[in-house]
Image 1: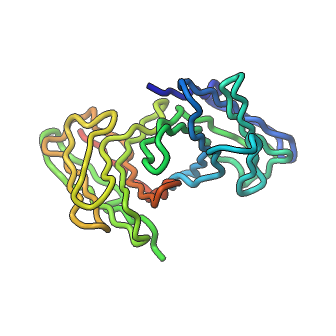
Image 2: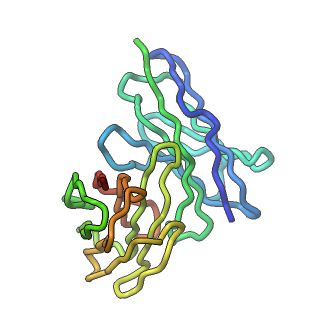
Length: 114
Length: 110
């Protein structure tokens, strides 16, 4: 069975600084990978996804992620964070395209300081 | 365009009571899902429905039942609530990908 690890429970960065959130997955074949963001009291919103092809994927709100098969990683990055990026971020893995029975990581809470 | 609508937003139950969480989507998606979110555990799949008339168990189905009433609606029922079911419940739908989430139902069982 697949699994996802987000090693950082909570990260604090200054506004304008760069950001990298880590995600490692475990699965025998190439998975489908996702990053979702959750603002307080809201549902999850898709930031970006990787299915195949170019390993660097661009998402909404200026986020990008890079799939590294050799490291089983799919880290999320943003060059300059804004106060509105404060939220919880979830990495997820799927193994069956079209069937969104995703396995989610435990999430990373991002705090932005002025 | 409402997307995925969940009702109620908040609910408090006593142990042993029953209730149904409602979910409706207006995007004509075939697949619908119920997840629960607990602190430090991410989201875990309870049940899903790949199409109208079909349902299947996810990772944590015990204590729950579901009904895919039609293409739009997918309800989650707790027959006899337990404190371990205190959680935030999210309904989601998808065409093939990605998931579209509702805003959640916060359930407390005392």
